[in-house]
Amino acid sequence: MENNIHEDCGVALVRLLKPLSYYQEKYGTWRYGLGKLYLMMEKQHNRGQEGAGIASVKLNTQPGNEYMFRERAEGPNAITEIFGSANRQINQVVKENSVFVDSNLQEVPFAGELYMGHLRYSTTGKSGLKYVHPFLRRNNWRAKNLCLCGNYNMTNVEEVFEELTRQGQCPRIYSDSYIMLELMGHRLDREVERNFREAKKQGLEDQNITRYIDEHVKMENVLKTTMKHFDGGYVVTGITGSGEMFAMRDPHGIRPAFYYKNDEVVVLASERPVLQTTFDIEYDDVQELKPGTALIVRSNGETVIKKILEPQSNAACSFERIYFSRGSDQDIYRERKKLGEQLVPAVLKSIGGDTRHTVFSFIPNTAESAFYGLLDGFKKHVIERKIERIESLGHTPTHEELLDILSEYVRCEKVAWKDIKLRTFITEGNARNDLAAHVYDITYGSLEPYVDNLVIIDDSIVRGTTLKESILHILDRLHPKKIVMVSSAPQIRYPDYYGIDMPRLEEFCVFRATVALLKERGMESILENVYKECLAELSKPREEMQNAVRDIYAPFSVDEINHKIVEMLRPEGMTTPIDIVYQSLDGLHQAIPNNPGDWYFSGHYPTPGGTRLCNQAYVNFFEKVYKTASTQSIDHNNAK
Ligand SMILES: O=P(O)(O)OC[C@H]1O[C@H](OP(=O)(O)OP(=O)(O)O)[C@H](O)[C@@H]1O
Image 1 (cartoon, rainbow, N blue to C red):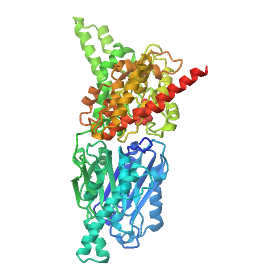
Image 2 (image 1 turned 90 degrees about the vertical axis):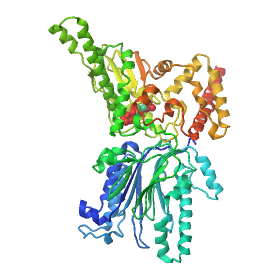
Image 3 (image 1 turned 180 degrees about the vertical axis):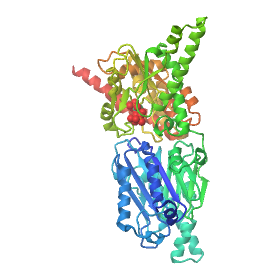
Image 4 (image 1 turned 120 degrees about the vertical axis):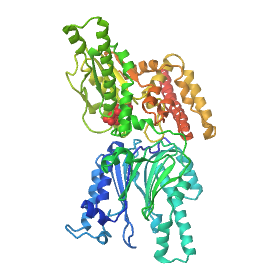
């Protein structure tokens, strides 16, 4: 499924529990829900900059009135566009200074009680409004209308696609979002029809049937029969025409979701601080949605948590904590700092203990918190060194001695700048190299040329694009004695299929360096053997499959691979010594104990779908990249 859409996104749900007049009276606006949705989405802009969408459902409408609204847009200004459009639609109907009563809002678009928002990040090159969430499945039966969005990536879309076609359906688009919409829509239809039969049995007629269905549809039934088919990391959210709202988290808790409820609202977001700030509430007021469960708000406002699938081993994504989340979460901030602090011994070794002639800095923006942790660690180190030096004097220090010892401090400078507030990693693939090459700049004169080392921390080094295309080259213009590149994350060795878009092995600089080492040392047979092992694994039943790719890393130490990475990423003509320091796997788990999902670094996938796709990624690499390159070089040599 390499061409499938991969998305790690942001979601936001708002359910108003009172009539709109309540918010008008208390907060001076009936657009309270829409306003809160806007804030929640802006605060999650870090989670998706390629598109955004919103949907709203209005309760208790009369036949003939629209009750489900949706607006979507692409591009970095999508949030502004969709809310601008929603407000324009509202203003066309609402007369300025008109007297507010609930019944006046019957015909006003987006004047609803249910709101859902989505921020999209997809980097596979599939673009177009039709891929922007929410997805909508319409029907004349109110309760059968389904609007869906989510933060997810499914690893078994082929199987589900087959399942749908076996049922006699004919999905229009081959993407996990459309397939989920169709499958869930199919189950919702059955649930509505079950209630229809029940209503008929009770002798109900006309709108009483609709009312009965609206009141009795159970989203947990729909979720149970739908979600058991999927393998992946997800938070799926949706609203129905009859006013059901739900959000469900995958059984391993790979993707995050947090919610809050009081007597006015039920809200859910991908990150905890979004709710804390938007609703002026404390850390403990916000609950984490537990793996395998769903938050369901029924059409009457009743809110329940239902177990949908049996929770499995905790595999909450650690990359979410290292990079993807905004980082204003108190736990994530602490974790990122710890990641930085733990790197002190390795960095110290690399600079030969010479903190006096070392300038510390970071690559904007995500690495900033890890940088503060690294600084804290070095401050502690310098204090300890001062104590040692004073104690080792063996006499009361003279003024000059004290001055010399105490004047040492940790030197930090703002060395690198990022010119546009855009996350390059989550920018559509082809445009990325160019963006990474031009987005960074440096502060001239921020270190003493040829005397000072420069230690610069990034949250992660994945493809190495940021380093190769931009950072190393511009840092070298400062003429540091040595550059130490530090990654707060461990070496990224394996692809991800649960939402962060890293599906191809050959894109990782760690993988490319390992392949280069194998070739260089005449160990290419390992590449061939691993290919055969991967094929053998792929022919096994899903549950028995092992990750055969791990064998290619076995012959080398982390340091050997690091040296090769430096060699490969070093810009042409640059002679400054470069070291690279990665976090260890143990260090990762110490810093982030509650998010043990580490498949990127360890190759341990929480679900069979991940293992299968990893083996498949190697087969693709071997057949399409490695073999092709070998054939081309043979052809080239023959042609000489
Ligand atoms: O090795 P690479 O493949 O280049 O990927 C890693 C880089 O990508 C991210 O930056 P991004 O610009 O997305 O975001 P940021 O400003 O939040 O750090 C990340 O912070 C690293 O700097």
